Image 1 (cartoon, rainbow, N blue to C red):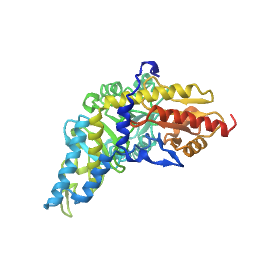
Image 2 (image 1 turned 90 degrees about the vertical axis):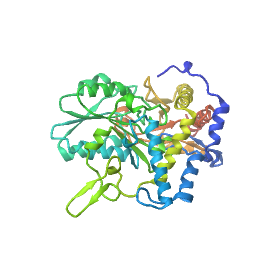
Image 3 (image 1 turned 180 degrees about the vertical axis):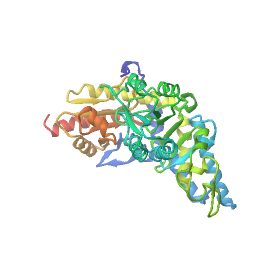
Image 4 (image 1 turned 30 degrees about the vertical axis):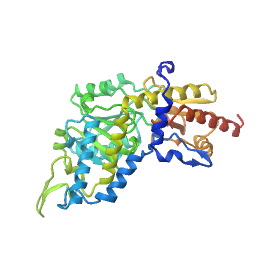
Length: 417
């Protein structure tokens, strides 16, 4: 892991200002101030995001792309403005490369069924890694069952880092797609995605990056990465649930058939033939999550106003501070100690199940995740049934890390350690 001594302390008044933007942080849980450390599951929402969704329903509520009346025109303008914001945020070539979906899971399933399935033949290979979330495993298992393709898995080492040499050896003449997480949700490991993409492209293999855990922690430039697909969820980056993004290069989207049929994804329909809409709308059948898209745009405005580099620096400090604190507790064992990590800290306590740890911490107002984190193969790799995961965001503080360690001391007392 990166040396903690090299990370500067955050500026407390700056973090206090950020915290004031999030109404829920004033809540109390079991009589204690809320310490929210479950950001890997979902982030909290600033007032500006809540207000943006509220304003749409209060003032502009209408369907998009279909009405000639003013409300529909305003809703359409706001919806497509959000698409353009997302395009700029990840540096896509143009807004038409942004497809609105429900989240990362739907984005990956869309690629599996619309891009991969029509192209796969028996014996073809899809390459994933051993650190993947279930959402980047199961869709590929399904498409392999449907086509006779084979799933290949790149191993990880004991620290939780991808074995890149093994990855490059597994790239072969039958590899048809690489689908790799940018940041591992159960471990925090940051994968060398530029190298991963370059190695695949040298063999003519497209790459999908699961950006669910990376989008709120790292600056993302899809053109610099040269990835073919990038998927993320709005609720991981201070936006609403139920909205997400699939970025794909325009040429790939043009070649892909629609995954779902219905309204708004068509140009003309007769009983004999349907002509599909242009990209990206041919992948957005039915009434979309208009309010969610608008609020996601507001979330990107919010983090853009702070700056991703500033956020990343603050979170690096928290991770280093928390890592140092937990390493001083002999009964705590960290799971995932890769050199390149972002703000996820997973651990186990000897003799105590993760669910018990999470329950006791909750009584102290501390929200963490306890379980397999939708990454059961990772748990199997480390020989544990579950871990406790503390995951940090821009509004967390060193005082909250201190509250976590104090809560873990209470766990020791309860279990007589």
